[in-house]
Image (cartoon, rainbow, N blue to C red; front, side, top):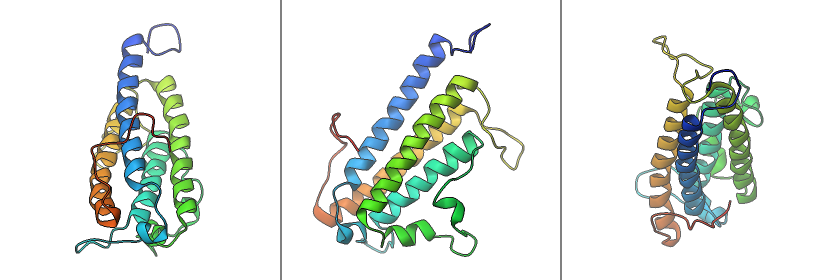
Length: 184
């Protein structure tokens, strides 16, 4: 943050824009890899994995809530996560994502991303990239806003790779990324 005001410094703003641009590119590619599927495509598996695209989409929606709302900003999970007993059903999002309607799965993820965008903008404005997240690791370290954003980028990159394999098995869609004008 710059001295004497509440606005981020130009260098923080430029770095934040870069980080958010990479996160958005990963979100857009993930959306493209998982979009426009019917129930059969969202519940298909491949090889020895039980992973489905529907479960993956719902899992990434949970990751948005867990990493950005809860761990970064210190907010609650919100629906539907706050009503789930993950101790009794630790794979709930994977299991239900494979059987939920495509409309419900896609809407849940889009809503999670929308919420995260607002949360991240507020947190960057309030704390800057070097500011602390709202949680502490078991070893006593508190990650920075920057490290949380980098973790989200890595999470999307990893799961987009999973989506790439699953989507190719469903209908042959392959490629390096979504067109710039692809919206989700």
